[in-house]
Picture 1 (cartoon, one colour):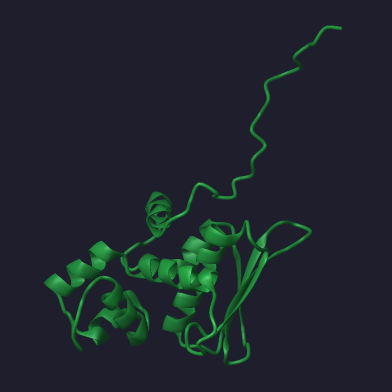
Picture 2: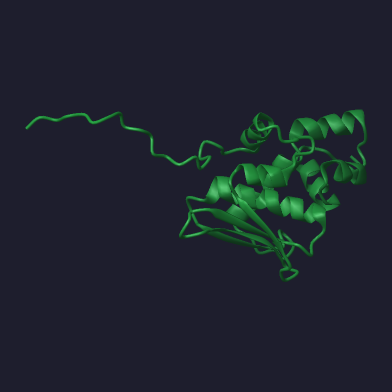
Length: 180
């Protein structure tokens, strides 16, 4: 019996962005796609990753969710439309972290208010850290505190995140004091 080659074998891997695994990878992708990165336009980035976004009123303690549609394989993110826009940005970044880092572990994530109730697991902690690094990259954070302002409120406004997110990120990056 002889083997006949009918054509070249093509890579059938869907462009699922599995090669992206860090906040820096996502920021690089944003730059390549012409998406603003300082601060990052997180909604455009989610769309560039093929995530369908929905903004809907949810219970107050639910920030958002991410689920893979079983029929189409498309990832659908739902964000609580009743939350402050800065909170929504963090939720979107958090859900993107689940998509990039945890999709092999689960195809559905529902996120209650992050860190407020004391209940959390390693994926939630990792997603929060990823989101903070994506929204407030270390270089930009340090540059802003050095060249513009070290006030929490100014940083929160610049990066379009909550004051609490700025305080936690500052602590992770080694900053001390009420105002950085």
